[in-house]
Every structure is written in structure tokens, then in C-alpha cells.
Image (cartoon, rainbow, N blue to C red; front, side, top):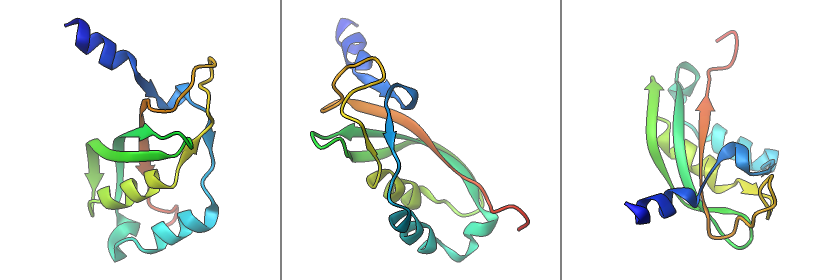
Length: 112
């Protein structure tokens, strides 16, 4: 029971970290490669990743998902792979080696 509490304490939430915006061209490359029916698809993907020493996200996995239309899990994981955070949390703790959990949400473009 104590071990579980220690392991859980190491997990950061998306609001705990300072996100570095991914390069727009990399985001475009991922979303342009999505399935043809992605316009009619939407979903929320709860993701968990490890933060490496360069503050990049690695070893990401989908913890849960709620999907309408095509399953965009692979696109969510690709999106997570290009994300990065600043080296310290909002409260000043180092992030390297920690786990972070956060949602990625896809919505159809307005008017479609």
C-alpha cells in the first residue's frame, strides 16, 4: 500500500507542468496523415508518458479513450511524441524521469 502511494505521487498531471508548444509543421504532418473520415471523428484520449532528460515525452500510452467515429489513438500517440515540457514543474520540481498524465482531445472542424 505504501509503495502504491509513492508510485502515484510521482505522476504529474498536465496542469502541473509548463508545456512547450509543438512545432506547427509537425502537428500539421500528423493531422494531415489522419484517416479520411477524421473530419467526422472526435475523441478524448487520456495519455501517460515518461518525461526524458531533454524534457520530451517518451513511452507514451493511451490509458483510456472516448471516441466517436474513427479511432484516432495512433494519432493521439503521435501527437504526444512531439510534445515537450519545461524542465521544472510550476512549483519548481524537476520533471526528468517523471510520469505525466494529460488528455488529448480531437474535435471535428467547425462547419463540417
